[in-house]
Image 1 (cartoon, rainbow, N blue to C red):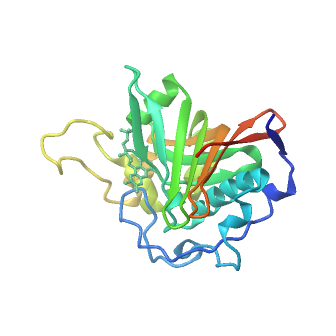
Image 2 (image 1 turned 180 degrees about the horizontal axis):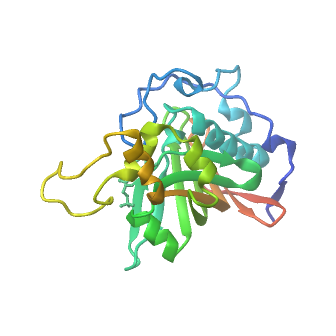
Length: 246
Ligand SMILES: Cc1cc2nc3c(=O)[nH]c(=O)nc-3n(C[C@H](O)[C@H](O)[C@H](O)COP(=O)(O)O)c2cc1C
């Protein structure tokens, strides 16, 4: 029998302690927040005295630590958890993978959020089949977290409005690209980006906030003292966790 980690388990909200390392600059990509812009995103959370191995033999703490790392990745633009890989299935049943920027996380609700263009392949794939997997890996911490769950797509005219309103103007610009993402073009640069704020804001019709609600979380910690792997299934009231052979 697995151990039930209750939804309101205080360890799910109490920050665990980690030794965190300095990070290389994030690459400049259209969706990513620019490195060096100052503020909370510039640095990892403050280093603390104990290492991640404090939770290595504690199922509940491992689950809590996974969610804490994901939540911290929203603001920490240089953290590897800021740019997870998401997997969908295309119309022919083939797996599709791509990087996205993590925009939101609500551990208690088991939710994460990212933004995309409604014209993108991933958006169409999720509209047809909302099952999604999300992969995070931090090579400094040697922690891999995988989520499996269901995606909901919301436009700026609905539940995605707050996400659109809070996005920086530079981040909004990519939703006004013409033709739409994935369109074949005659040359690499044969696409148009908006030149002014009005053009950027016109892209609102293409904006999609995608919320993923996880029903499974898998944790893998690589540790010289012995790797640890655990899987957690959402029961409706808590996370039911059990250890697996790494
Ligand atoms: C670091 C990085 C961050 C990215 N962030 C996003 C993002 O938040 N949303 C998005 O739609 N695409 C993002 N992309 C681009 C996607 O990885 C992908 O190439 C694009 O969205 C087209 O994917 P699709 O055709 O499978 O829908 C990002 C790429 C990189 C390298």
